[in-house]
Image (cartoon, rainbow, N blue to C red):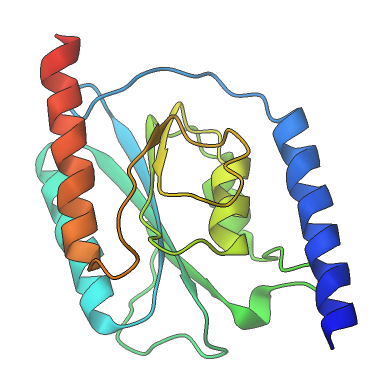
Amino acid sequence: MPFLDNIRVRLWNRKIKALVRHSKRERAMVGLDKAKNVGIYYFQENEAQYNSVKALVDELTGRNISVVVLAYCPDKVKPAYIWENPHFGMFSKTDLGFDNVPHNHFVDIFVNQKFDILFDLSVVDHYQNVYVSTRSRAKFKIGHSNFNNYNIFDLIVSTNEKVSLDEHIKDVLHYLNNFNSVSK
């Protein structure tokens, strides 16, 4: 089995390096005060995380920002408490190919949208968050990554792996609000 895992890792690294090399996007420093549309990606493990992201979506839509959410569920079955709609999509382990690349229609739609800001709320690095963040055409990408970084994110908010998603969201919003006050 380690032999197959090594092949998967090599295929994945080759794929990400090619994506980084060929990625073309318009970069811009965008704060929450100027953002019109936002993409949120997160790693879905439990209902509390779903509720945290839902609260963030409510806060952003209260600021008249259009929000689209993409979640990765590491289980084979998507949780029943999540209601998918055109602004909230999810992919699971069954949507991953041999090389851990997601093959899902909503993922393709998500990464091709031109967001003003992309929030990658994953606290733990995994192949899927690096893939989605790399492919995204967002102008300003915010994330947490120790995964060789590949120069994916424009703003890296480092946190402890044991921090809750609520605390991580508060940290990200704190930095963005400070960014807004500095850029004025």
